[in-house]
Length: 129
Image (cartoon, rainbow, N blue to C red; front, side, top):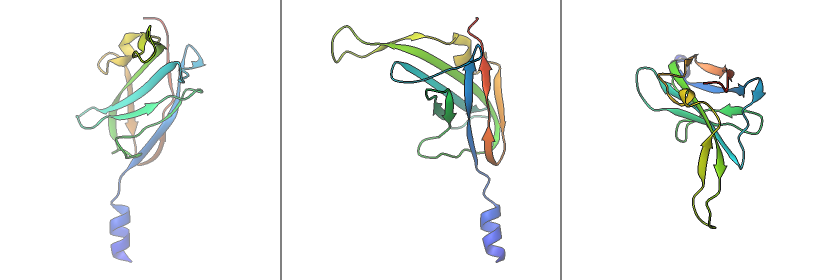
């Protein structure tokens, strides 16, 4: 019994989900909008990423892992309107929807202290620079 507790009690993983709003409305991703959120460990390490759905909701993952280590994270948010290329098969370009500062971990002003277990972080951003 003790070995089960030692193995099970030593795991310290966290899951993170939440919602992003801009100017009080969901920052909705979809087929014509690419919207993402990233959590970068403040002390370095792999970044966890989430794609915002049509309601601005996200769940973070890091590679194939849906969990990440607890700790202090710098958060970035970016969204772009996808503009199709001029010819079929050409790559799409993007027109930023969110202010550029939110895409820079040192300028966004967004952070999260992730604890073991389930975490929810909702972020409200503004469209003004």
